[in-house]
Image (cartoon, rainbow, N blue to C red; front, side):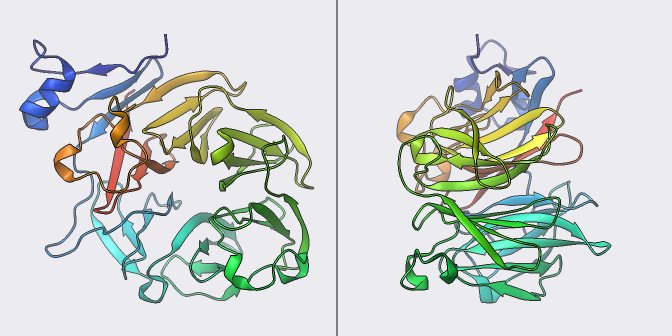
Amino acid sequence: MHARTIVLTAALALPAFLASRLLPAQEIGAPVLGTGKQRFEWVHDWATLPEGVSFGNTHGCIVSDSSGRVYVNTDTKRAVMVFEADGRLVDSWGEDLAGGLHGMCVVEEDGGEFLYLTHTARHIAAKATLGGEIPWTLGYPEASGLYDSADSYRPTSIAVAPDGGIFVADGYGKSWIHQYDAEREYLRSFAGPGPEPGRTRTPHGISIDLRGEEPLLVVSDRENHRLQWFDLSGELVRTLAEELRRPCHTDFFGEELLVADLAGRVSLFDGKGELLAHLGDNPDASLRATNGAPRERWTDGEFLAPHCAHFDARGDIYVMDWNALGRITKLRRVD
């Protein structure tokens, strides 16, 4: 009932998986994924890069600002690449942040917009302007008493609550979530490693869920194969484990919950946690959650290792595959 749906506008006599390999995308039409109100057209080669510029390894996050510009992390000296919604590269920055910029969210404050970031190799969180100026960094949570040094702290994600409070997930380190107030004063640490409810194993991504009466922190508890919701004091509220493999990151559009699942697909759930659609589910298990898939193994309509997925203001989806060559895909919502 929840199987992936692909619609081709030409070459209908061929099965979709054959047509996508034998004919160029412009000849067969773009794959359309999903059903009903959750239908998305796969945009072939969305990003336009200048001669000599490549993504390099894509192992970070994607966000967009109020103007519709899209910000993409890479491991190169262009640690943040900035695109228009049509895929044109218009800016890049972050040479000093190369190799480890991993988590990112956009925050509106003081009449402007800022990026909040995490860096796994430098063991920091940071605030940046949209143009790349960094007014502050936040080091490892020494006050927690959980770390002997910064070396074991490898933060993967950051989220900012409506009151300005900051949450940082140590997804590649000790699996704790650390909370600060709006002035960056340490408040508490919660979750911590383990399989039990309320514990985490690789809390890879965190986001603020504003769909209910009170804001909640949703944690992509990747190696426990579930999502967990916490209130803003760190108390567990609920979990979702069905229809998930290795969830990496979440985002929201209206009541829709978007999940980037490292094991080869992107998933949509409704406000009650019911599955709406799996998008781009890769039928080849050997290509799922792998960083080294060569370009000749990429197929329109199929993801490899979704590391982050993001809704823009229109409800279109941008997906970053964890891939050494760099792969960013746009899914245009079909009205």
